[in-house]
Image (tube, rainbow, N blue to C red; front, side):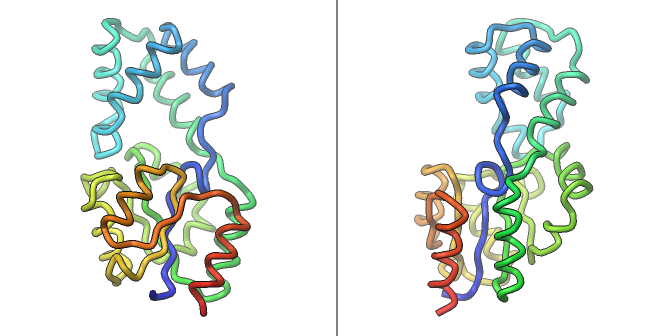
Length: 199
């Protein structure tokens, strides 16, 4: 295996939505939480693959049979909820880059978030050789083509990639695409497996 490590973003390097952020979004939507999140996630794949924010929130409202009073506020609250990092994993990114690993990112992410991430977190994102965003390639994990495009962007075959994701479905799909893939557990796990890659 080549010395190439690719990370998912959310649930690995980035934190997922906090309970407080989720409550704020639900309050803005004015819809009971369980119903809201069902529609939120059901409509998300198209958003991840490049749909614009207004169309996404329109689709969520349609599925719920309602209209949102303040779509710009919902959009802003949602974007902010997805922009926070795990400082320990950012430290791991720097460590691995300093050790000579070639790093890549493969994330299901909406277009509206990309400039926010790159402006707020450009310093450590700059340690990656390639940033593969679902919204810019038109396919999202667990579609096989997403993994293939990621490997191509790194200049290697899928079999040359060690991939970390916090979602078992995405890990299985990465393995089916030919990658060595692991379900993310901790920074210590990443450090240990990265040492094995260097041997």
